[in-house]
Image (cartoon, protein in one colour):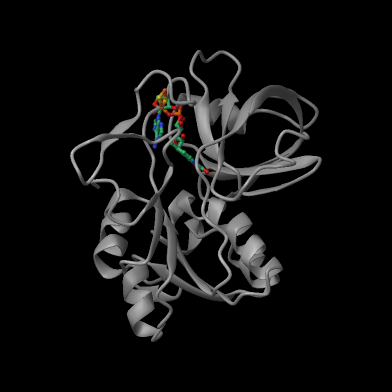
Length: 243
Ligand SMILES: Cc1cc2nc3c(=O)[nH]c(=O)nc-3n(C[C@H](O)[C@H](O)[C@H](O)COP(=O)(O)OP(=O)(O)OC[C@H]3O[C@@H](n4cnc5c(N)ncnc54)[C@H](O)[C@@H]3O)c2cc1C
Ligand code: FES
């Protein structure tokens, strides 16, 4: 983990209020799937934690939703500008030698793309269930298909795929895989944690240091202890953290 300036090679809107930023950087050459970067948006004191969506020895891709001033300012950054990154941070998703079901909701989908890539590279079957509020905010479906994943979608308004939640899509499509990796809104992760016992969920929390020092991102563990989302997570075994 270190800090580095990265050149923005592209920053484009890909869905309703959702942007994809491509960065020239070697910072993520050794990154693992499910890890994140702390992005220093010019003019903002606290770095913004954003998951690594794809990465390689000389690039990283992040996909982010505009929800406040920091992400709004990110969306206004132009190709050729530089941005300071700190990372890669956090405990990753495991890449095991077995088939996997990926369940993502909203902007929880991006870290699952690099995860899908790693499982496909091992020759494993990957089923991805991607959820969003509506078709206009559904992201990365084509990218999962391009990796050879079996892809299902769910939208709350029924404008694409199953009408309802990602778990409704699992039921409707008779998906039987039992090893699950999931990232998305808290309500969705609670549902996933009730439906599955074998797998991992990736959590969000407001962060300051991003590296385990300030205790600003603590959640409760099942046994009453404390877990730092930035360092002990963001990926936790299902049931490890109290959601
Ligand atoms: C490990 C991790 C990975 C994430 N990955 C992604 C991703 O890939 N794509 C994406 O769109 N979003 C992701 N988020 C959420 C993202 O960090 C926030 O949406 C973003 O920080 C909001 O910044 P803002 O200035 O626009 O919003 P504001 O509401 O103005 O932010 C005010 C402060 O609260 C913090 N904050 C606000 N919402 C969140 C949140 N949901 N989680 C953590 N901090 C928050 C901000 O960082 C900032 O310090 C991730 C969060 C975490 C913890
Ligand atoms: S953000 Fe400082 S300990 Fe997690």
